[in-house]
Image (cartoon, rainbow, N blue to C red; front, side, top):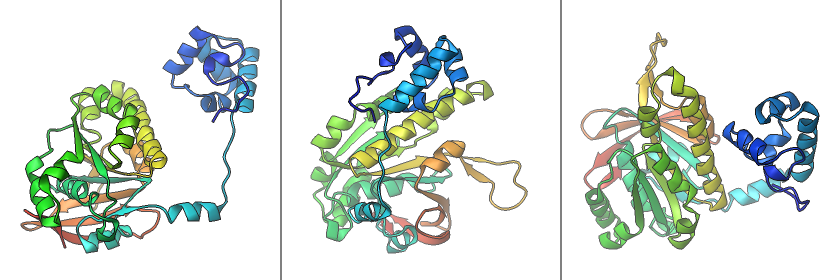
Length: 316
C-alpha cells in the first residue's frame, strides 16, 4: 500500500517513464510492491533503464510502500466475525468446519456430473437464509462459464428452504462468460455490484474451463497460468475486502504418472492449489449418493463424508 510520499504509480518512480512503466506492466510488474522486491538487473533488463536507475527505482518503491502488521490476537478477533454458509448437509458442514467460510476460497473438483454445480446451487439458496439457519442474508454473483446454471433447480431448492422462489432468483446475479476476458472483467468490475446487491457469495462454475480451452499446448501454459493467477488473486482480494465467500468448481484430468490410488487431478496446478483455502474432491457413488473428500483445509484434518443429491437439494 503506497504512503503519501508522491509515489503512487510506476511512472512516479525515478527513471521510470511511461514507456518503461508499460514494459514493466506487460511483464507482470504492475504495482509498487512488485518493484520493491525486484532485482536491479532484472528490472533493468525488462524496463530498458540502467542498473543504477533500477536501484533508485527499487529504493523509492520500498520507501513508498508499507507492511501492515497485526497481532495473532487481532486476527483471531477478525475471524470471529467470519460467516458460514451451510451446504445443506450437516455431515459435510462438519467435515469442513461448519460450512463454506467467508474471506476464503473453497474449491470443489470432480468429474462430469459429480455434483459440483448442485452444491453451488444449494449454496446460492442457503446464503439468502437468516444466519440462524445457516445463511448470511446476502445475494449471489454466479459466473457461469459452461452453461450449467439452471434456475429451475434454484426454484425447487428455494421452496424446500422456505424461501420465495421469485425473490431467491432475483437475489442471484448471473453472468454467462464466453471468454476468459469476460470472466476476468466480471470480477474486475464487480465492486459496485457487490455493494449494491449485498453480495455474500461468488460462484464460478467452472473456474478453469475457459482457460483450458483458450490456452492450448505447452507454449501457452505460461500465459494461461499468469492470467489464472491474476484472476484468483482478484477473487481472494474481493473475499477479504467484502468478507464474502467464494465457491469455485474445477475440472479434472488423469495423472498418468500416478501408479497407485485415484489418478484424478484438478486443473490449475499449484497456483490454484495454493490459493484455495479449502479443497474438496467430489466423486459419484450409487444412485443419488456422492462421496466428498476433504483434501486440504487449514482447520480440519482430511476425511470423507457421504451426501445425497435430491430434487430438493443437498442432504445427508
